[in-house]
Image 1 (spheres, one colour):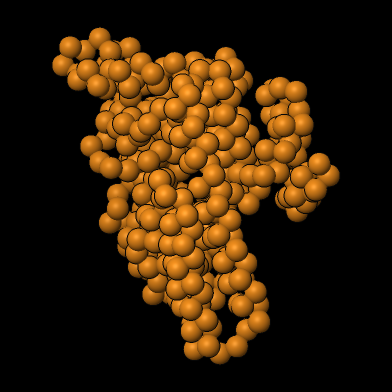
Image 2 (cartoon, rainbow, N blue to C red):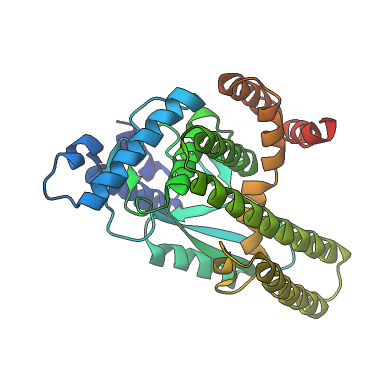
Length: 345
């Protein structure tokens, strides 16, 4: 019924926006039509053994999420859908040529966000081309899963089912966290909170259920990822400082290109020091520009504060309640309070 309501809203929207919302509704309908209860898939003799094994482990993780992390106990991630494509959606990110402030799109139900999602890659590419022609840096990212914020029971998808167990657990914890707290018009708060639930949830899962080699692999992954993100944040700050200084467009373009070249070189040096992976070469595929830094800011800038907050609180329900309290504050105030948490610790 909610989806029908969304479809009924489409004719009321401006004509240019109507096409976007129609594709979103059609895409969600497709996901909905293709999902099957996991128990039904497990009972199907035509399904491969590897898929059944992965789905059984996913159900164990899903049950753990509600019983031990106090995440919603509903129908999400208790069904499976094979979309027949490598991504659930493709998100478009954009930023001005000489600014790291993300371009934002606004939606009737969720408020404004620093990305725009499409269920078909060509549509995302067309939006990116439109913004590029308008002078923006753009980036199109393949997204393996997304949350409907509890409006629908989100299924597990073929895009993630082959993932290593800790990565799959992190995805389930992250997406369920969006159903616990979601703030209109604040992508950074929402994604940093969900990333904290993901990180600390996987930590707890591995302590209680993980094998020694899983714990070692995850610890190495976090060390490498944190070092890589620190490198990106360093260059993001350098870019922001340079843009703030102003100057001619030609001079700004030269500095921008030089900084991106330095970033690539520093990443190679960092990677050489790691020896064994994981590596993050994928970040450097395609052109590097300001838009590439938008997801980094959204997913990681408030992550340390949320981690500090969780470690100062006895249990998960109390943590969620504290986050809801912060979410009710004006954006500037809640961000300031979060940023002060680790300093106080």
